[in-house]
Image: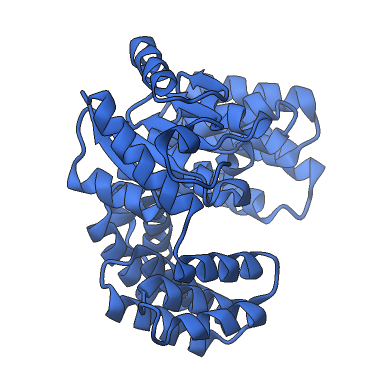
Length: 394
């Protein structure tokens, strides 16, 4: 990366990833970037998922990204981008046909570098890019020290990071909320939970809208078993930034744990509506959460996705069958259990759920037969014994 400040020298060596679901917009951005002097690779992606795959294959110096896209939107890409150590300080410019306060809050939470409202002229693009690239690649002394501390924490050196942060909390440096928040994360890493909580609270005194501090306090409270406090912090964060689907999902989980099923359902429905870019290993866990909240259709969709990824995992068919049965989709549930029995003909849990299904379907003789098979396979199967006694005691 060139270190001098003229636009040509800033833009010339850049490799840029352009992300938009409209080919015409991607072409326009490519032409603008070339006109501004970008001489590196300019690669295009049609959505966030395609962009993320490109980012794994090739490092880029700048991302210019739309917000509303299929599969993975720009906000989800930005969150994943900043969670990667490789891309924590790489410029990310968001473009959109509309920028609401909620979108601004969600983007700022994930450290977007700037916005452009469509349509825009090349002069506006140039001005914004000069600003964000200079900030990222020519930081102030205080910002450089902060990044050094963040890197030390990430590499398992919280005590060394704290020494730098203590300097940043004193004049002549500005006393930022993010400094106190990072101090809290260092203390938490060292197991000093009271000190961590005090730092997070101090960060909120500095900036009552600093969302990371709310998030950290919620996680700390949850780890200590104070679920009501954790929920309170997350709800305040949600009020400030309502478009974070992961936070809404976490709120749904907390509501389930604290005996508020209706509120859990509302948070989880909203979370699903906003969309998730899910890794394959999280789908079963999330499916169970939605199932517990009475959102059987969403749970079934997630179980189906999990089965596509792991077609030999018998318990996924079993749980999908439960989700289908609870929607009164008896025939589909039966097919699901039959598929599971092909994989494991001696699975007592499948036979037990077959019994529950048949009874729910009005097939009492078949229900009895399935429960008896479950008990033959596992004579100490308590649930099957209770089911048999309750429904067939006569």
